[in-house]
Length: 312
Image (cartoon, rainbow, N blue to C red; front, side, top):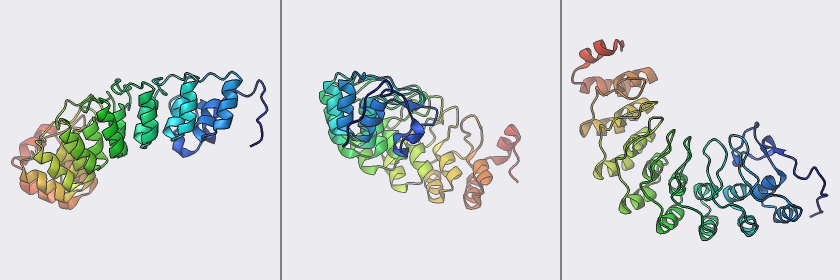
């Protein structure tokens, strides 16, 4: 590869719209030359940039920015990861403002086992608190990404299987695995002590059963019920849902019937919208679901009067 001429422009920001979609960046962000070279796996250019004074800890910029180590980690560029670590890159530096995911969390979510192992060897923290907005711990990211070997590695390294979720759009490892329909990981987490019921954060939270009901996975719903999931667990405040509400909203008739059979409350409202499963089913045009719910309701009229919502 031709040598890249070095000048005062070598560290000029690279606009993120030049990145591939895999990078997860927005046009308002910019990456430095080192960060972009790390993401692309260009070890030779990364080495040259470092030799000419590039800071291996150039901070993540913007909403979805990444340090060079984070960029290399999410792309699975193990040689670049090793080079940056030997150059004293901070293994636990935070990411951009949305998600704030560090290198090991990004690698875990992307399923790069060797990169995760390398970062652990370098001392990456496995139980740091997730970023407030859409953050994940490494094990939460791995469970969400669906890589069982990465989940096993993190558990063996001491990851907290019940680490609390982020304040906004957070998921525990079990909730993330259920939402992603990763049955093998759900089983593993349950065996390793994952709690089926944990307190929900205020914004866009889901219990594992609510998550499974929302995606319509009957096997997951059954497994979580067997594990003691509360069929009538309340939803979170903002955009929350009960399991029955989630299934009704998505039109999953078989899940609705199963939840009703185990005692789901047809009159229970959810979240800030304060709608019942019947109301949301009708709103979404799921007439078959609405008919089943209407038949099962114990006391429809008083509820409708209470909330002044018409369903006809």
